[in-house]
Length: 305
Image (cartoon, rainbow, N blue to C red; front, side, top):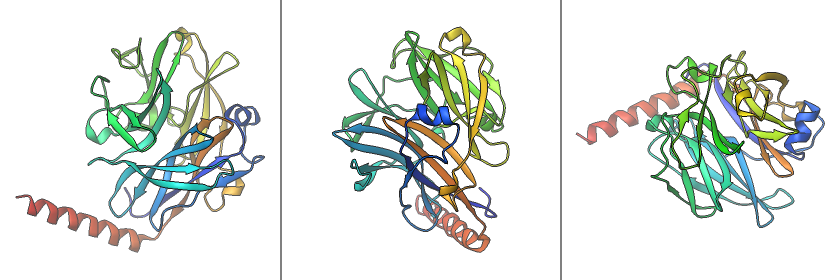
């Protein structure tokens, strides 16, 4: 992570549904409720949401440059989109991000990105929304990045980026299949579905719209998470190998100064969750934070001997 640039993300709640945004092709016409960041050199990103009891539960990555580790935080909003409660819901020894939230089989599940742990772990809400437990029965063949599941055509499908080689993290899209969520997951092919830095890494919720599967993808051609590019395909599984690129959605002007990127577009009922970024270039501050981080890590390792 370069000290010469510091990406700071911010989460917004768009007052429009996912399909309306896709039909318009832009975020500029819609009102957005921006959520506050937790402090200097910390940010919220990767928002996914679910409505319960007339409240919007927004799960996000909370990242702190001082520790260089992400946790999963929750912000609960009322119908006026005011924050009424917030806190940490999941923290592990490794970095967590992209808390994909979904309902299936009468349960609420979370599938966060945790490739530094060496595997993809599925969590079940033991007591929604604050208590979560890992599901040991879930087995996935890879430490997938930004794994995004959808149930369609009588099966579960998982779109994801491979964790290795490093060059494929931004430029390769893979697909796995299972008969049940906890069933046997297998890749549908030995090769990625596509290779393209502009549309191969997931950036939100897969959706079925008017007989088509829509995938929001990160466009990383100019910068990490520079924009969202939509991919479309027929809902027939044999057509998942032939996606077509649709239009590119960028950060809205109302996000200023967070207009340098957009890398999440996730559906949450009648609203849509996004994140946008600004780039800071305070080299001195970042160098000091990174030095403190490495010194603290070194002392921690010395004490363990």
